[in-house]
Each structure stands twice: as structure tokens, then as C-alpha cells.
Image 1 (cartoon, rainbow over the protein chains, first blue to last red):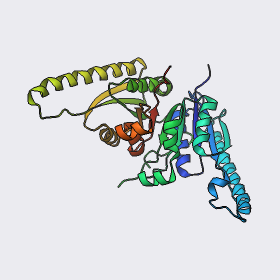
Image 2: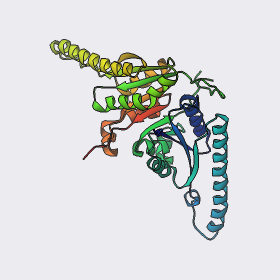
Image 3: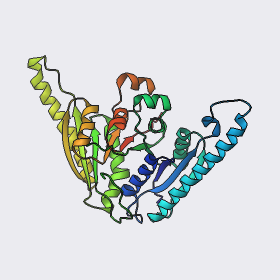
Image 4: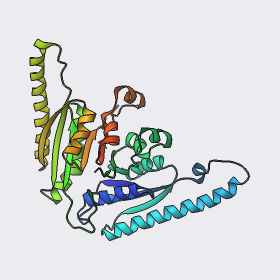
Amino acid sequence: MEKPVMVVGLDESEHSFYALEWTFQHFFSPPENSPFKLVIVNAKPSPSSVVGFAGPSAAEVVTYVDRDLKMIAARVLEKAKEICTSKSIKDAICESVDGDPRNVLCDAVDKYHASVLVVGSHGYGAIKRAVLGSVSDYCAHHAHCSVMIVKRPKMKH
Amino acid sequence: MEGGVSSGGATAAPLNVLVAIDDSDESFHALRWALDNILKQKSETDQNSTVVTIAQVVEPLPRYAFPVVETASKVQEENAARVLSRAFEMCRDSSLKAKTIILEGDPKDKICRAVEEMNINLLIVGSRGLGQIKRAFLGSVSDYCSHHAKCPVLVVKPPPKKT
């Protein structure tokens, strides 16, 4: 029988990688009889969402920004593949998709018929979240499957 | 570091799960889904490491109507007991260690407090699937918990409505 799919959204932040490690620790060890199939999805934002101005020099800046974004995405995937290998997970799918993370992750859920979507959370407060937007918020409401939001524990002393 | 990552460990880490339920269908669906898709597999691979705590939050009854309070609170107790024992049975059927608790007060608050006090690794809540506007008016426990709980939160969506 096909294993249910767990999609993990990954960007270059530490929170994302913490979420990935947490998922490995609880659902993929031991790796041989893990109940899930792992799909790691990185969203590469389009340069136009990052470059905020228009004008004659915008075209050049966009090329540089795009090159940078491609490098970042490649680095994230590279690191994700390394982690999978180091945890002996052989059949994981790692891919990078262009677009807004919110849509990319929800689309990936539909594409792979995932049972669970795992996302990290920056732990923004309400105001930052309203201004900057929250991928984990959007996914929790719009993904067509259950959503696991993994936060890094804050150290309180 | 609390919640630190084990490197290349072959055994699964112990998981303390808190499932928040009330007597709604969505809650039980969430519990059922979590048992079938997430927790059963863990119990198969590692018998003793997953402990499920089922928490039911009851809103305290208003204290102003004196004669009504006694019977009403008794009914509430019986309801709560019934909900919890049904949930407990579901866990037992999936061969999971479970315990039940009743929390009294505002659900959002109490659930997040319980997560801290009981050292929970994963909080599981159902979602009523309310739209944006309803959620703003009625409030959403799953929303609040996913932002304020100090541990990872799994929000289980209601099954798609069959029209």
C-alpha cells in the first residue's frame, strides 16, 4: 500500500530547518519503517516580489536578485538532501518550485495528495504577522490537509 | 537544549501528545484522524514511547443562578465524563497509552497553559473550518493555539463536506 505523504515546507531560515529536524526526529527515525513518504518543498520567490521599485535600473537589479534567489534555493535543497542522506532516508523527494511560498506549499499538498503539511514558524507577534504575512497561517487555513506548525521552543529562564 | 536533535539516533524520541477535545464532531474527527494517521504508526514502531493526554476544556457555569447550578454542573460533569471515556476508548483501541484530564476555563488559555505544565511535545487540535469572518467573530481556538502554544501544533481539518 502506498505510504501517506508528508510535505515539509523549507526555506533558508533556521526555523525551517528546525522544523525539518523535528519532523525527522519524531516521524522518520528509525528511517526503515517510517510510516510516511517525505516530500521536501522549497519555494523560490519570484524576483518581482522582492524588488520593490520600477524604473530603468530595475531590470538589472532583477537579474542579480534572481541569480541570488536561485543560489539560495539551490543551497537549501543541497542542505536538505544532505540531511536526508545523513538520516538514511532514501526515498525522499526534494524540489524547489518558483512562486509565493503560500501557494507553492498548498499546491504541493494537492499534487502529492499529502496527509500532512509541516511548516516552521517564525514566531512573529500579531503585528509583524499582519504586516509581513505568515506562510504558516495561510497554509493552516488553506491547505487541503492537516497542518503541523513546528516552533522552536523559546528559552525561558 | 530542550527539544534538542539527536544525531543519527535509531530509536524514536518519546512523544507527549495533548489532544484537545470538546464534544463536537470536529474534535472527535481530529482525534480519529490523528490516531489513524500519526499516532498508530508511532505505537507500532515503539510501544511505550508515545503518551496521549486527552484534555477536555469545559467552560465554567455562571454562578448567579443558585438552584440551577447543582443540577447543571452535574449534567456537565456527566457529559464531560462521557466524552472523555469515548476518547479514551479510541486511544486504547489503537494500542496507545492514554490519560484524560478536564480543564475548566477559557479553552485557548487552558490548553496553552497545560502544554507548558505537562511538557507536551505535540498539541493536536481540530479546526471547525470557519471562514475568515466567522473566525474573527467567534474566535478560533486552533488559531490561538497555533500562535501561542509553546510546542508544535497539528491542526486537523474537518473532512470535506459532501454535497
